[in-house]
Image (cartoon, rainbow, N blue to C red):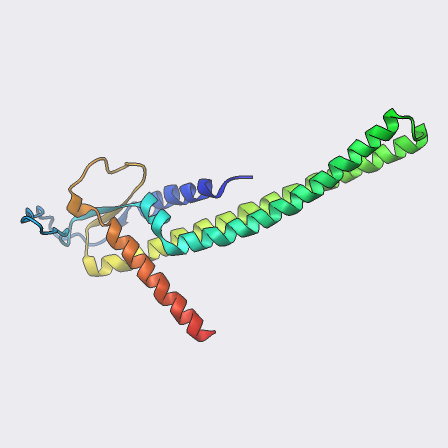
Length: 206
């Protein structure tokens, strides 16, 4: 059963390709002005900017809330599977113990062995089904995070007017760039602000 971090990593990889990159009507690109001491330079409209996707996924409150919910569901499913597995293992151990001690006839042993094999097949089918449930829970979580980030970034750029927004993951495709082109903090702050606002609206509706 795959760990949630693998799926979040997948989410980042997919988003880096899907969002990678958002094209908008490009304005004439101008060089970023030099910052005066203590001043923060913000990329101008028409610039090519980027955000660090790993950080966004890690610090996005919605992503963390979803991860917590899915982890609880996954743990519950795994506990059910483990309990059933241990029960089956005990049945096999008890059977082997009785056979080794000669506590059942050959006919009874054959019938019992056949029954246990059937239970084993049923368990394997059950475990596969639960494994698929876990995969689907994780995949839905991944898709929700991808969609939320992509939707926000598209809306964000309607005001900013950047020529291109790149989702950078693991230091690629952006190897090095002017700090003014890194909009990660803005994306994280905006996503979390929007998430809190939407949670408040839902709470009022309920």
